Length: 318
Length: 262
Image (tube, rainbow over all chains, first blue to last red; front, side, top):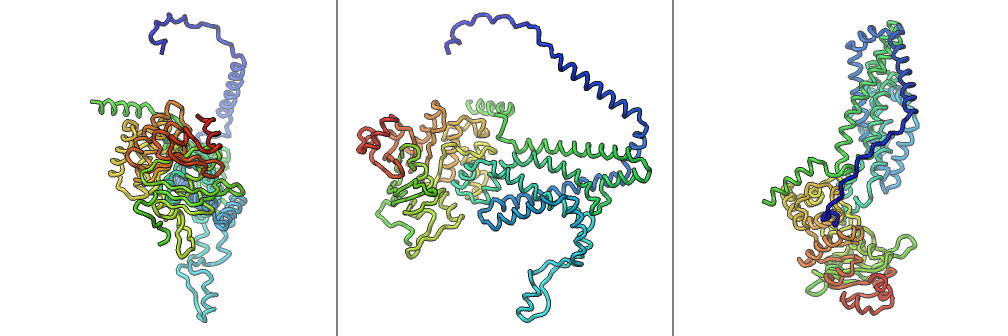
């Protein structure tokens, strides 16, 4: 360029101007500071909070077990929910109208039912049949048709056992979550440029490989942030397990201490602090997942990558 | 075996017989007859909406044709013919046919979540079951061939348009196709990046690859193309030697189009 060959004039002196005064910001900051001071003052002076009592009782073995149950339930319900969601999202996008319709009906049904209602219903499925059998559909009718007596069943499970406690809670939460996740996954899949699937099929990839290797990894970018939301919501919804009931769960345990000792507020605050802590933990996990799946998007070449490339090119020149 | 075309010693790589394609009520292709010999480079020009891209997409069955016949290397595309009856091929068989046909898109369509090298390795590994090490070696060789030996570990969004399109060409070549289809490969590029992509394509043509190139680059069509086809409104208006068609077009429509673009 021309400017490189000519000598540049000396750069003019730095601008020193009086900055604009932002009076509004100072007023807002003062108001907020006063409100915070009032809040802290209330926390410290109101005896009902019973901080010592709360601290002594929020880490009892029963509460710790409750936290563990809550976390395990959250993780399992989300894993099952995501798997169901992927299956129903792919079904929903199927060219076969029956398959797509079945997925639509599942999503319609389980999104419509409040979780607490669903949990209560699942917990009482034991009343519908005493035992639940796995076997050939319409086995007795078919056997009768051919003149035989008997059935074709392999596995019988006691209804009162499988639809109680932890499994009932997991089943209810996972089925409900699957419906929400199906919509999130579908949005993710549809956000991927159709040119991607086209390029993959032009290379001779099958539809399954294209979905698994090309479309879903890119859809993850869109899927993960709302899934993080769903996970946090799920953590909180484990407190609905009282409808089953699952009594080993965190909120139930903390409330039990509260009602036993009549220290309702301290244990309610303990509950708040526990959920805050667990949610923060999940947010850390989400951060790393998002980073993993944003490869090739957003930021251009990282400094480390450029350094590696330049080092490589220098090396190859010698 | 009537789905294998029986002709002379050198069967055409691509043969189209009155190929028609419509989207709903819109007829995009109205009977295309064409032949592309092995090692031939055919350039296709024409106004937008003339059906050039659609025809290219029919060749690897990204679009289903409504009537006519289309053969690649003697095999009917997308169908099997038995006793005068056509049977649709299964997804798997269509995928197998596509392995032999490389395609380069106007918008590159690189996989953004993979590095340049991974883009090139993906199909050989997943489709042909090539071992990772062999695919990596071959991929690196192909990327060096298109002049990107230094950028193998870069993600597509770290590359310029011209570089991305060269990766896309390497990715298609990794499947060792018999035929390469180029769908306006330089139309989405900044003008100063067009040359590097055309250079790679010129090298490919010199190596004997059979190519069909839908393009607006008349210079490339003249220098590299063996035949030039002018399409308009779903039909082939004129086909022949590029220099002849460009300098002395026989049809009024060709003349009108060339007067606008040259």
